Length: 129
Image (cartoon, rainbow, N blue to C red; front, side, top):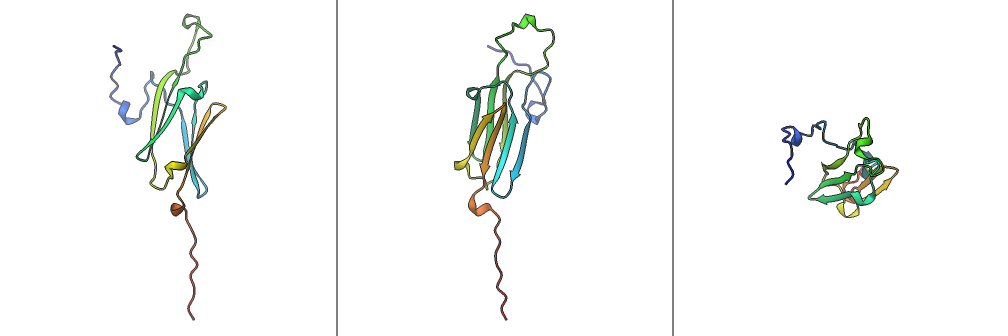
């Protein structure tokens, strides 16, 4: 059995010194998609899991400690390791069936296309004489 230290701020999104959360940017790319970018350095694609359930996007993963250097050889360690989970509420306008993800150069990019009916459109108004 693993003993886990209780963290009263864990569910409020605050990271403690022993936890790791990758930084994430979310932005809208024009009128056709949302884009999520997460920094996940030194991870392989197999260590990253992306799931969408009921308009909630969840990114899970594990950043593993290097096997190249033994733990007793380190003088100083600042980088974080271990498992993480990040969840984001998606707007109802996202077409969850067309979501695509790419992992390149330590950055995960998730493209969340918007449904056609959610995209803004211009309506022409006829003027009656």
